[in-house]
Length: 441
Image 1 (tube, helix red, strand yellow):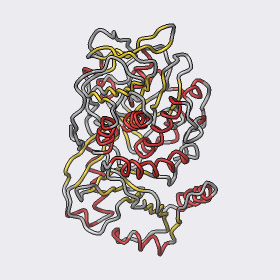
Image 2 (image 1 turned 30 degrees about the vertical axis):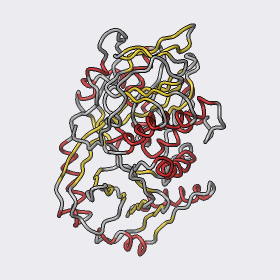
Image 3 (image 1 turned 180 degrees about the vertical axis):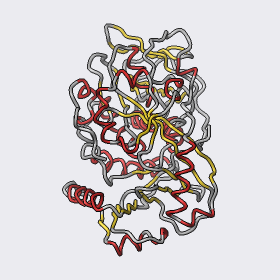
Image 4 (image 1 turned 135 degrees about the vertical axis):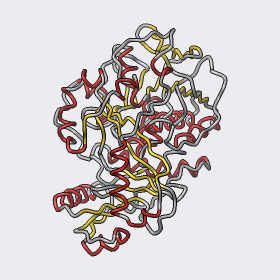
């Protein structure tokens, strides 16, 4: 896989039973398991491939409040504090730091939108600074351009996508939990309609509580249980460059390209929102519900090919728990990059920031970004399967809010006071109309 990933050793022996089983080793899954283990529960996390190998290691690494939809902002604010607390609690290094995020623009409508968000953010105690033309030019001096304005969010930051999920998984094991890589969950065992166990390719683990944090695979897994979870993914391509560029912002967004400093001194480069829509059986099934989402983001999306269909994560087929499943046939979603987009991204980046002409492309990769119809995650209990809690559909926003999502899951499981109001995230909202309620950012 071309996306950088820190690899860890995990637990070899599968337990016979657990208080809670977490399915999926992305950032939402590992933080859910971490906070559950921290509360003294016997936790087992099963991952069909490698911890963090899919979208949790393939994103920009931004941990932001800036421009969050109102439904996600409280979780984002709490998550920033939890990123910091995790390092203090465990000594593990996720690469998180509050370096501030810089946005620059020459589009008056865009600037007005950011100003409206600033005014809203003030009402919930979030500080962000609108930049005048002179201030934007100074903060964006590496571009050697004039700007109409911008925004700087000083308390936001970045973490390292290649390390974050793996080191959280290591912290789970230090707390007594078990983590199992290359161990696909094939399905759930039910007694009287309630969860009684998880069938994996390596055996069955008895439990009464399961957290499904399956990322882009979550809907097809739900389908096996007769649960309707509308989810669709797009394929996004990004790249990293070698170290060598000097005096660039740690994290910068413009309409042309966005950059993030990496731990090795290089940068991740991407065009915000740009992606390919690969038709799949699942996309066709839920196509009507995603019309508002696709219309809102149509300028950034283009029709793809058969990458999604071949990957198998959006199948509508039922599989047997006693035979090899699609998750075992494709343990890590690693789709082809859109080479045209990679070339355009690097060209735009060098035009915007001349220092990047000193660099070369180190790696390029693609990932499937899964979404719900309204662009807000689904976190909460599944009403018709007692004992099953869903944490999926993070819609390209999941890395930064992973700690808050995991904390909320632990709150739901243990009956603790929720860290944020769980109502906006409840999965049952997707059974009614969310038409026209697409996330603003």
